[in-house]
Image 1 (cartoon, rainbow over the protein chains, first blue to last red):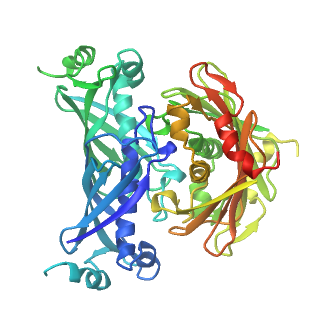
Image 2 (cartoon, each protein chain N blue to C red; image 1 turned 90 degrees about the horizontal axis):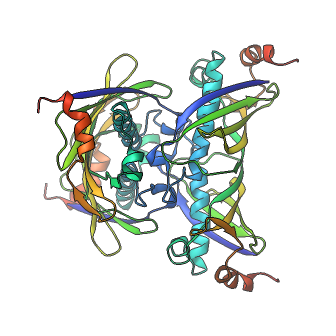
Image 3 (tube, one colour; image 1 turned 180 degrees about the vertical axis):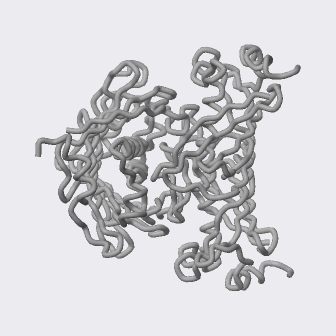
Length: 137
Length: 137
Length: 137
Length: 137
């Protein structure tokens, strides 16, 4: 298992007139979580696209909203990989507020697409290599 | 069952550098779908908030991404209620592109909160009244 | 002079906790205004990019905020060209609420970039051709 | 004069299909710049709203786009106050990329509104107090 945490403050433009983080903005928090997790492993989405020609479109998203997040709260995005990626990579995400309370939890599944052929491929070896030390596989 | 369709064009600012509608923007399409469905019934979110003091926060969201939506495509948002709301209201949503192909499908569950007490309540009678003719209940 | 009007409703996710359309979302309304103006002339951004290889990045934006726009209001985006484009194209934009009151006014200047050379170019002839009938030039 | 710098990374959802930070998202960077400047002075928007009942709507925005910002670039938001606020507060903002090149520059003018009366007021004394040491006034 590999877990990574990253802070993100709720911005004014992200709230709605209920005074809460708008439900449609959580997906961006999930994106930040997984991108920063990859960076913590020494990988970037940017390199995957530019150097390896691999795109990672999202194929499934699920989230439950537990309690509201308010303007200016510093949330913690906790992102987890619970198994090694294969055809897919699944990020489990939880957002906590400053008091450590769960705000939102969910998961997002992405696949790997080779840009030139536009075909889905298996998780690339350079990614698996970085991840294997964290799994018993 | 009550079904409603509403068109929405993919805007430049909604695309990402893959050239597709960014995955985080679909939730806004879902919002448009359900708001316009309610309007087609003669109800508005705005009135629910302002006149009835009822908020409808999202508690669960799930979506699968079937094929990409591209810049300037006119999508059709099909929103369905498959049962009468009770403690929750569940909107089933499907987005189709101009060729009638499914782009994205999912569902979103909301609850009803009384603004003054901040307590969850049952679906209000004025909403059920509008919906009953479409259900065998 | 060429003037075009297009309706756009203020969505929940576009409001902020003041209960108003968030100031950072107006630029998207401006984009919708100019894209739909071009469409009314029989042109699309999409074709300009895909068929003509011309990109139109924004180089300058200015707007004043006159009165707030509220959730669910149907705004009218009035977009004007006051002179024929040359190196630049300048769209003058005004947003009106349902009571015909000015909400926001401004202008946005874009240039023309040839995608292959990444050089700025003069306004393309096929665009000028569509516009000349509306100008005394 | 008071100057403050704050980093912000360009996120995937903020890019458009040109591969650049979408022009409509810069206003959010400006918001982050001024909010974090206030925080560096020991003030927060949140407190201004909640404790002092003062809202700060934007009344004017101007920006020029100098060069594109790309996905995953870490931008520096430099925010400056060049004079003490009076009826208005004007933030001058410049965004620089990782090579220190100017990406975008502009300014945003806000006023102060008393929430209860919905009237514009002069810059509050608790804000001026924090700022005076940085100005010769």
